[in-house]
Image (cartoon, rainbow over all chains, first blue to last red; front, side, top):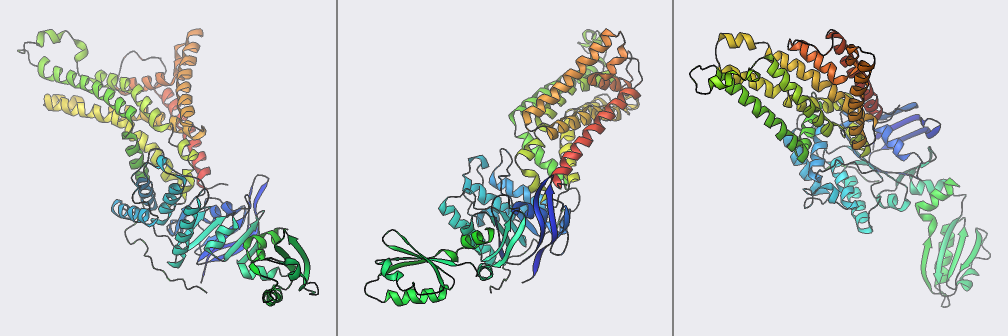
Length: 306
Length: 291
């Protein structure tokens, strides 16, 4: 894997608002999740990488070059913006076609590319309808189609799941994973953690304009081992199960939720899981579900932000 | 670790490297011709052209033939004479039409793109602010010239075809240049002015109303100043009057609307164009790459 986006000491401020603060990050090929709460600087970072913003300090390079007004770089990038970006009275096909033409394609190639891109996102049947008649999910897909129509090496998807229904999200997850499998480099931004987790385990966590963490979710998790894991165990006799952990020094806290759930906070989850397995063999304790909330990105994010 | 193998192919066609503004012109024109109001205005402009065509045909076919049964009657109608004045009048009458068309087509050109967040999509492609601004401007200019210079020059050609001869040719040889020059003087400032309003306003309606109000207020203020101060040269400050004065100079018309030479109104129009260009450039450049 090689570096495709490199930001060195990048800061960006708008008046007195600091959007990005001394950011140093290198994003490699593959699917990368850009994660952070609203206002964390995700969209600002994407626009810096597209050359739409000029860094207040530092430099951003994409494919080793500055992206600003650089046709060679911009031709290798596809961008699906967060907000709807449509012309009035235009069909989905026309939208994709014209943006392909602006990208530099000939009319003949743009026609084929627009049809293929619409097909790829499942919009062939509706591509000749006016965009104003599209549902939110269709608009999202047609935006991705315009980004895909030029077969870019790098694709920026800014909040692609925003406003989609569950089925639409699933389709979007599949599409992004498929793009990654096909060799596209994709940067997906989102403020919803499970969305990113569904498409990649490689994340950049942004918080208030700074990088909180960067890497694989599990690698990030290992950085914060000082924080205890929380394990939820649903069983028939939580109080009996709790007796197995009372003497365990790695267990920091035991709690009961209702009559059937034990919540364990531990510094050594592996040992804890072994004890749960052993306890589950006892006839009095019927374990129905084990859930470790700290495996999710949400937990990582919460720990880091705190 | 996943192995990233490319299973797609990059575009293998040729890239359009120059003249990307032409794409914007092409797209804007396609959007424009779909509009019902535009088609209606086209019809109005075409009817006016048909009247002028009748004038040219009547003058060349009937009045030039002393044996024609209608010749005697039409001899009295001096307004049918095909000369520079006829083309000056044609363009003067087309000017409000051009303004309306530019208003219709141009008032939403930039503000709609800003409102629809299209700027970031445009500029995430290999399109520069120059391509964008030039494309928008030229689409209006081409439409404007299509309503002024093009039909007028066609009339000149028809006039030469119906009354062929050395005399007609030498008389009309400079008319196309004069027509093109005056058409450009009408169309370019209107286009720039309306685009500038579109750049600073947030909606198409506000931009259109603002452009219209500026034009009306400008004429009223100039007329009031000229009336109160008993000095007709203040009419220079009226934009339509300035255009008229330039047209009179181009088409060698007597009785100018005010006594100042054509250089003054020309400077006024150039100043307006410059101001509008600065406004458009600033707005579009800011959208292309935020400071």
